[in-house]
Length: 410
Image (spheres, rainbow, N blue to C red):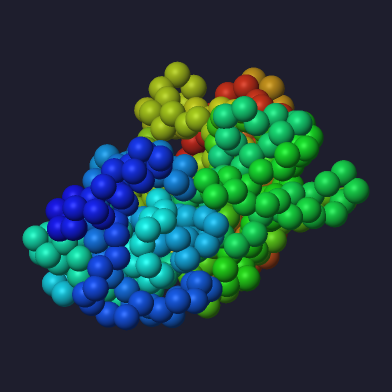
């Protein structure tokens, strides 16, 4: 740290270092007057910026991120008992702007202050200055993939601690559904885990996560994985965007069955020997070999898919939203040694989840599956194609080939 402090403050810093395990920044007398109320939205705030030797780890209990050190520690007031852990902040200093991920807490910083990594600080100010006036606000950046649930080491059905990761907006509340069907709010600890001291039971669980803007994500059939992670099916929308669609709850009617349509012709190819350019793998709790060459319907390779837990899913994300009204159906070929029960659905540009179509594969032969757009609700746009395990249990591998969106008029 390059800040210049009087000797009595330096001694205080050493004491803090012994107690907390990381270097903290002290407020000075330069720069803008900081604001004092806790952050509840994306209003612009002011304070002072300093820097420290960040690793990406810290009080928020995230993993070190040596390949991305655009991170920072938030002052105690705005940290607000871990409420801003995982938030993305756009900060402006004398020489520029930077976006940082909040991963740590700075107990000695004044309200409005941020302690940046050295790498991030160098983008907004001369490191020689050590301490500079800043303004900052919370933002909702585009993120790869959905939110992720992480179970803390030592969790069990009798003591359960869950952390939310990869969230676009700060998380305000985490709940789980109890055996009587009611949602129970779980308290958040300073180290950024939501801890149920009496345990949540053996699982699978239904979780409900609310961000600071009131957007809600609900995930059902979330398995328990000791010290492991489970991906959600959704991500928060941008602040002020469309609400996150909520999945069907237990007891609702089963998904519809696809109905025949005229023989499709080629439209947009998503997978044929390889995942098409412009598509990314956003799958959760699923292992996919995109270059499998032993069991193939057409061409050189297929996708070999293994669902590692119940309700896992393939999710393929398009970089550019697709105008779905121009297409008749989603079609693919599938092969499995045993019957597999699958739910096929999509996500729209606004993050909405379409209706689901239930498919049961035939064992021992290639089978073409055609899912009409009308059966998933005729979405106007598509950003993700999903094929989810629907029996609630891990499954043996199966194989998928020639995945396309087709237009019957072509």
